[in-house]
Amino acid sequence: MKFLLGCAVWAYKGWIGEFYPPKSPAGELLHLYSQRLRTVEGNTTFYAIPSSETIAQWKSQMSPGFRLCPKLPRSLTHNGLQKTEAAIALEVRHPDWFESPHASHLNELLTQLGVGRVLLDSRPAYSHSNLYKTPLDVRKPRLPVQPVVTADFSFVRFISHPDQEVNQPFLEAWVKWVDQALKLGRQIYFFVHCPIEDYSPANARQFQQLLEENGVLIPPLPWNQIDHSPIQLTLF
Image (tube, rainbow, N blue to C red; front, top):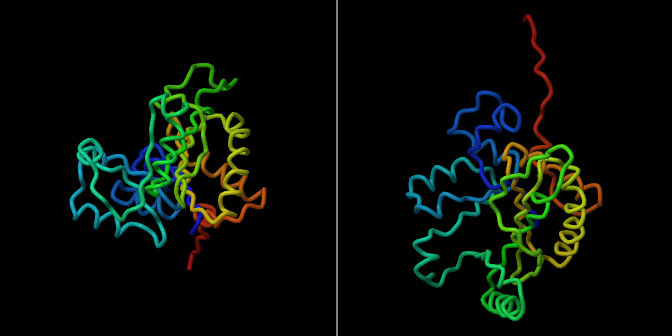
């Protein structure tokens, strides 16, 4: 599967009742999430290495083909990383990494190592909206967008705005980029965030719809295949 669309978290209780069915128990949220989207980030692993029992539990809840993309524990990233066979993507946030000569040096090194570069696009979240007069609490850096490819896969973090009209032009540009990358045989992980997390799933679905409308060859979104039709009751 070359294109995987997802969000940053799965255990967000604010999604219960819309993205998740009403009264969904916390222990089933990962399973329900994997029935709707194809991948998810994992932030908790940065702070502590999960037990083998926890990992086994996560695995048991995931639908076939679903991908969990956990952050490496800081005990590894801050103290040196040994050689590994797992696919790795690196995100840099200091502005110097986006300027010459540091940017080209970094990209060359990552390409040599086969390490992907996380592509962060926080422009929508910093944009003005007539519906949201108050600036959003973005909590993500405002950095240049440099959609470089340093491995056979790409890892995109799109920091969306609650107002989908704001997202539209930025997503349209990503549609073209995704189409070109897929035609070159690259695998793409595309994660949609939002400062107001309630909107993340709908914004991800907005991108799926744009891709389909523009004829980009991507798999159908599992969420769109869930039957939401009412149950027909009977007296007999």
